[in-house]
Image (cartoon, one colour):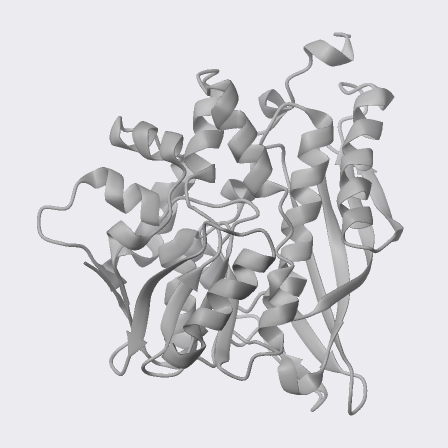
Length: 349
């Protein structure tokens, strides 16, 4: 068996991070015949609008936010892999406006291929993120698998009146994005062994930054809808807001924050396979500018792992939303577009 420092985790996985999610069109087909029965009144958010987490009212002042997220390696370093997976999982709680309270670990490892020391590093990385979020990993479940898999069940609390759904946006809302795009492209470059040291540092910095501004955004009445950008890309998750809220979305492409190195690689034709699968699922509902280059499409559908929060807020709240991001260490947050009355679709200008 190779020494731990020689092992490349990405060699064990057919797709890494949120790029290994089931494609939108396929997932829709799978779930189409799944029955929904006997939903209790206390279930404030379920599967109806593809939201980020389930929310269950416990009492007048508390609702439980529950989510699960796991994936195969997006990077080779085991500690970084654990950190990214844990950050990504907890993001769903922040995206509902909640505060995490504890987590459970989901662990699947090829025990005949990975040394115990490597697996320990993955778990240590996940624990370090939970410690930063102020919560314990209180248990979990592990199995022997063909590919390394790690993630969390995340549990949090939110006031029932402050739940931020992805389906409650309003016409006239502006759209604010908390993190730059490009993580999926950088992961593809990493697999090719061509990512720069600075590019890798940026990739790790963004994917391990907890979306904690979600808690502050929950306290703002002017914030109407919230989600995080993950495996379906900016276009896919914004279309979920548009469909759930029955609104049309418009995004100014030049306003969208991008990771500089990812943008350069995109212009050279680098993309993930998941980007094309995403576009196949929803591209018919996206209008690009006339003569738009193909790399623009691939950036819009680029699967983000532990991506940024996407906020729909009234124009009067825009400044407060940007300040909440800035105060939380998200200086890259930008206003990228708006929502209006109309058929649910996305127009890029």
